[in-house]
Image 1 (cartoon, rainbow, N blue to C red):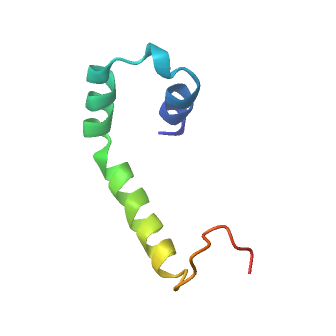
Image 2 (image 1 turned 90 degrees about the vertical axis):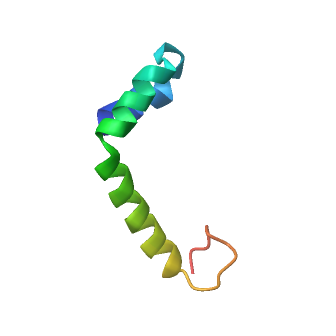
Length: 55
């Protein structure tokens, strides 16, 4: 997944829509797991409006 992310970020002009769709569909479990962690992290941030706060 990290390799794909690096290719997508640094060489996005080489990807066709079909390739991106296939990879995303084939690796959906990784994206779902990431979203679970992100959601949990955001919920633990409380009511802070500044997501980049260091306090």
